[in-house]
Length: 322
Length: 246
Image (cartoon, rainbow over all chains, first blue to last red; front, top):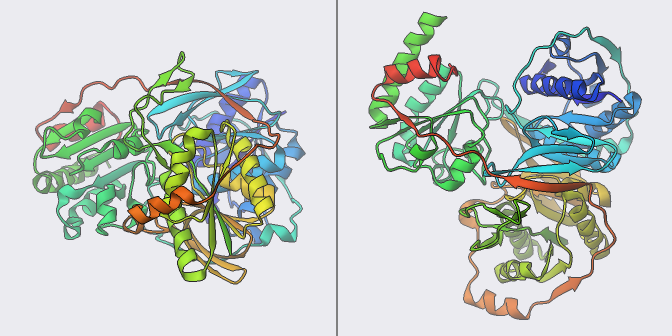
């Protein structure tokens, strides 16, 4: 009857979004009068999971699973669910979780709702609220199947510590050859940069920067804040910045704590994509830019003057608060 | 090679989102519908396979007659044939089941869908469809080459990309990057004329079940006014003491 949560790791380290998923699973388990079981794949250290409310951790250790594989990972999570007799699975909104969730849903004949933003308003019937129309609206949806899969929207619940004594158990799922019909040839990933998916702060810039050669000050600001860099659609279309940095309705969604938009006017598609961010700051020389209507804080002025000053000020601030 | 491109009929990205019938239905009043942008990237790549590798390209949508102009647009862009499964799209699973039936009957080598539709953002149909027909699946696909029955796909991962080797039949959930924005095609007059006579087959749905049921919609609470500040000192102070994000 427990709530199962898949706790993603990277290079053996449990990801922060996984801890948010455990926090959510714990609150949900409390609501349902049950406990949380986490399943981790090739994580080195799962001791943190208890701190956020996991009572049991199923640890899978298998060399074949070193690289992500949607089919195989879905198989592992499905078997963990059966092992536990769980009825609800909590997943994150990472690229990998979104990859495996539909496979898992078909395997388990489970109803799946993505981008869930809060605890169920009721668990019988099971009704959850999730974002739709790229954050321009929310829907309340009932999951009618016995087994339910929740894809938790990033940064929608937060980390909530709930010290629980967790027991660890080794778990060895049965994997069949079909699980590995896909071969990963190469992975190309910048390890020294904060990704938009993981970032708590995102610094984003648009056409107002006039050219790709002016991104140095954006990168400096991002580095000072430990932030990821992002850009608007025209900037990625013109090839000033890679597509992977394009945020907005057809690009990546951003759900960071702080989003700083520099020289971005704020087209409706862009605003939709970043709407789930908690605090938005806009720096733009046009006081009529639509972004000012969507932002919490704004400075009207020349980005080329303000951004370096802001970086300097933040460096001072960091030094004082270190 | 036979390719099936799944086309979702969605409100244009600039649409104002409103609800009607006591907030239980999307208000289509004054809304222009388009091919889901993620699907359009896929359709454009399919056109490349048609031109360079002589692929046949069919498009499919699950929906009522009101979605036919969207399918005609896909035909005008260059698809050879369209199929409309004549039933309302209720939830992701029931749509995936209808599409799986079309995919199986048509014996397609490659099924292309968008990573997600920009209306319900479920992002589940391509993955479910792949599982239902027993095909390989690559999500957030930003590159695809096919040689015989072998495929090489590039997938976007958080913070980078990954190159995969797999085989047909294959389903992909694609996004921008599979083709560039500048590769998208605007139908020309010839395409539009030809589209009028290309087959658009209406197919009755198979028995299917929804697993989820949306009860109501709501819009976010209106936002308070922006706080304009004059200096970076003040901004840093507010971000630290008021917003508490740094």
